[in-house]
Length: 142
Image (cartoon, rainbow, N blue to C red; front, side, top):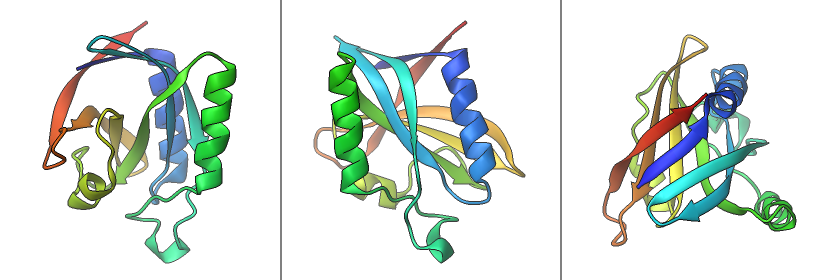
């Protein structure tokens, strides 16, 4: 799987996740999937509703957020193609918690944020048997 995303959208993700530091932040990726290519056309931040003392290593959203973004994507002839979030002071590698809560066919973009700076940006997809993540190629477009 290859993920295509513009440098401008990556910049928006980085700005949000740096602002959320030292807590995790995240949101949805809206776009299209054609064959083995996921094209991200917009990113939509979603508030972290995890308990405040857990936000440094957990990110939760509400089912209402999910439904609202599905409706927005549909209205724009897009789909939710995945999800992005940060790992403050940790590598941009999915955790076991991420694996257990992930969905196959979704793209996961993880950003490592260290000292309030985005330093690593990697893409992942959960295998169909849900036992591991497989890294995806990210193609940044100008």
